[in-house]
Image (tube, rainbow, N blue to C red; front, side, top):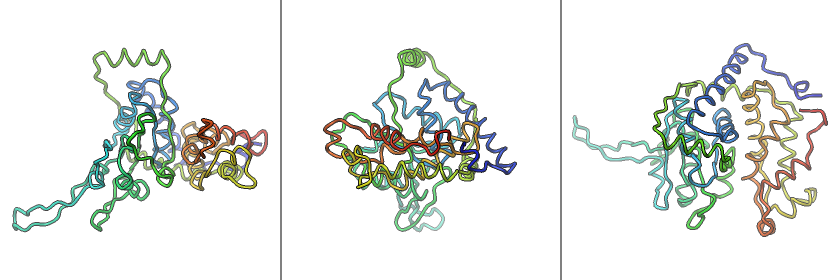
Length: 344
């Protein structure tokens, strides 16, 4: 029994044609990206999944791994407006959203308030080192991330679509930082871990970046394509068994009388309902990117770590034993088997 036998596939000829365009577009985007970006295939896939599923993501990695370069390059390849905000302790909310300024009308001589948009008015916003600014300023991104709009002086201004926030954090140098509250972390679809490259890949980076560089990109897709793909992703069907599997993974992560021993031992709070929502939504995008028209159990399993790792709050006992949320997710995947041994 397979998931294709439990859920219908896309039926509309227009949807099928759009799905084929998405698959071909992803291949083109990857080709363009690798003109400049070396390796990091998993990270690239998860960033593209965020885009096509309409989510925002947190990217964690030490300095110098090309986090900013990656997001900027993707914006160029997709012909999207890119904006980078360097978060610092003295950054104010108005530095992100924009503010009203007084200007004089040259014709009438009368003064009036004119709204000056901030850097959040872009298609792809990189919130660099988001944990280096106080919570009040961090919260300025919440409305933008969730509602795709900002409110200044009681007036609401919509943001251009598509709109995505990619925030970065440095896992070292935590002194003087402001950890993101769980409610804000939960608004990120993925917690993407960007690690060191292999030796051969690192050699290639060094040789490329120390030579003359003048890279031109072909526009593989556009913002209009991305919006169309986001609508298509939501039309991808999902079998009840696959959705239930995602829900069971999230429910099993929550401490309680029926929770596995390792959960009660290491976890303070488990994943919210937003976790299975994001696993299924991203699973739909992953299926289309791989040329399939249905979500499989393997999609859910592949996305479990980036979706769950920032939604499972570890307790002091886990920290003292150096047990991470990734370890808990591994245990969850072992403890919650996909229904039907033959289902994929």
